[in-house]
Image (cartoon, rainbow, N blue to C red):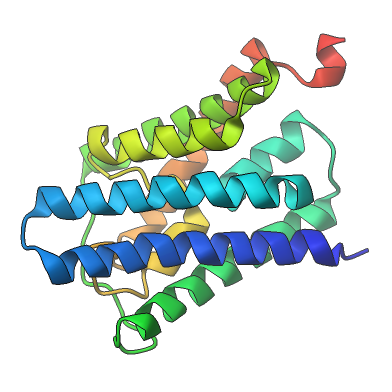
Length: 221
């Protein structure tokens, strides 16, 4: 059965996240040609948005906003059905595309653009594996420690924007949404398949580490 509240939360949360990523990228690009300042603005806006969005939508849907996080959660926590997983992922991808379109509209860009920003190469691909693994460890490590996961994820992504060569997309849904922005925050469609594949590899590696370090709550008991 469709959980409307959960689906809406994942759609809105992912849409608002992509609005923050793309909107801040466009704003930064409009305000300065300094790439370091553009990245700083993008990172701070994304981290701030994540903190708020995970806090408010977490009690409703878990606030995954990310197909990899949803997949790993499905296998680690075993608290959702396959139909819920599929619905979550559809909502995340749809929300990401909608969020990018809204960001484009807010900045008087064409509703739908095609990014020409190529992100490719072995180091960049490997970076996405690292970024995804780190994100998963932050989430499940934080959960098991009873910490503020929203703050941890926001801090991780803000930092990972700077220390990963891919700027830590670590999310196939967000990556798909960003294909429709020809801005600082965009990613060319031809770059996205390998990014998604590397994120999936990161998901597998992260799952294996989590299963060892922080097994499910039932297994711990």
